[in-house]
Length: 120
Length: 110
Image 1 (cartoon, rainbow over the protein chains, first blue to last red):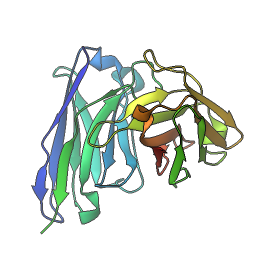
Image 2: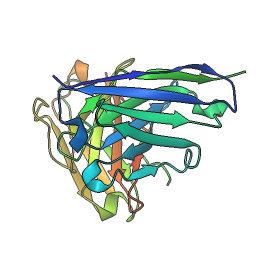
Image 3: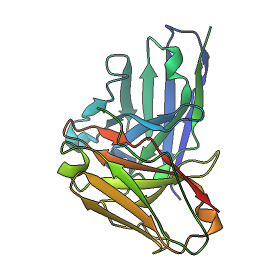
């Protein structure tokens, strides 16, 4: 059974940093691209970014709204993806999901999400 | 990258059919056959309903179908059922090698 479990969310002040983790199991993590998607309360889904597999040089891409502030990484030995968030803004407050695709197209596996609140 | 455009809400009666549109540009929806649709019930993670414009994952009822014409993709749900009431989001791969979601559509089953 595929499982994605996010952790690391919490309350942080504007300008602060937070690192989220996504522990994966039940599929070949090392061969899969991993994505982060967020959702502010009562709002729609927003793609945050992704990291590809070693075969694709661990290439990363980010949404314009987080580029330069957020960094996605992975540790294939731990089957874990990470989202390092720096210079956090109040508008970054959201539930953050990690997600992946079994076919390379369409996210068929999602974590339960972790809440990040940026507030003073 | 601007969000794809979806109607804020649609509604239909049980047994009827509805269609949700998702409009982008030639740099996303129109340029690639990598459009997906997701269903999200309150408090739950999104569920993949359609991928690559018109493909249904295993377990998704064939009442759900997808299509695309030009820069607009569509999700059609036939034989509406009460449990179809949810938010629906489209997404597309983009020419910047990023992904973009639509703003979401709330489906109400009357």
